[in-house]
Length: 411
Image (cartoon, rainbow, N blue to C red; front, side, top):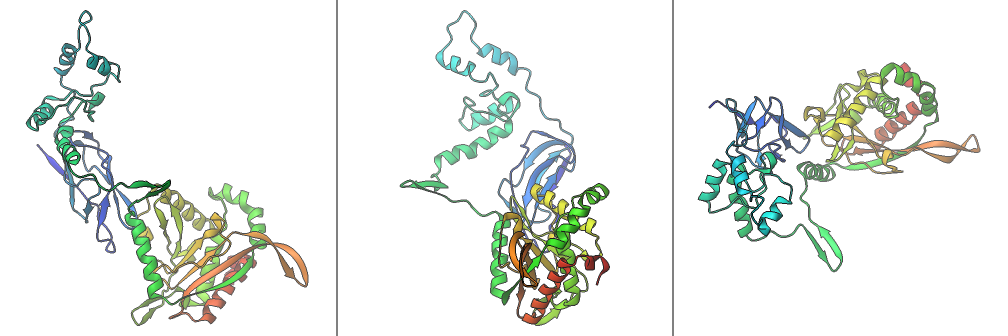
């Protein structure tokens, strides 16, 4: 017997522990190399744990929902074994158990034969022995083996099932109080971490928000003029986020304190521009980072953001991709938000909130005209960023967006 260990992947230094989700394989089942056995949820991402070698899953050491740390043993794979095929003697045994045509068929047998015709209630020899030792029967059990046969693993886990039946029932997750239903659902590790960080941000930062409005007409005209050629050339659609990223970088270069962070009583001025892009996912809000955004082209930014969105939905962003960042952008406009006060993402000192672009009546040169307007909001840590820098930084973003050619010429 040759055993290979399945262990928790290496977690980042900022992640001390993780939670196991649901095992996709059970003991006794065959696994292939790199086949995903289980997913591990951290407070940032969900990591897949692949099988390091082919064989048979011999033992699960940590069950669903367990809290684990880097390198901890999860399971063992027997690389020399093969998944057991249904015992040959079971077939004739099943045939002998079935009543002959001329014999009267008991009602219980009729009920079983009219179900699915599967092997439910039939146990392998090893499973039968284990069940007998526990004083249990395979009758009525739906196993995980072929055609529903009860496997050794099913028999071994049957004890916990029987104990669960005898144990006091837990408080119901759902209840109805006079037609007013409630449901109690535990927070995922990511949601709990989001809550912790947002509270930390509000408690530790002196958050203030400044607002401005931007006429998006120039950006929209530029986009409409080149979007087809852009997509054909780069294989990705030309959106608006790349313009906001470029405009933000231009403002951060002009006012470096907005790109800085606080460390105790020190201010750290970052000589690089790592822009976090807030992305919604089924598990909650995540903020992957555009590294060295100042060195990226419009096409590079659009490709990266599209990739972030796709992999966030699949839960496949890595911890490294969401660690760090010197400034963040949150786009509530995709959900229809008109105005908001975004919360700073620690340890950063500022965040830009952008919103839905809507046609509004504005005054230009004494005339009321209709323009596509977007309200911008910048929340900043007033401990190190004064109102002057925050307001001028937001004005710099506004000016860059209203004259996007300046972004291309870096002026």
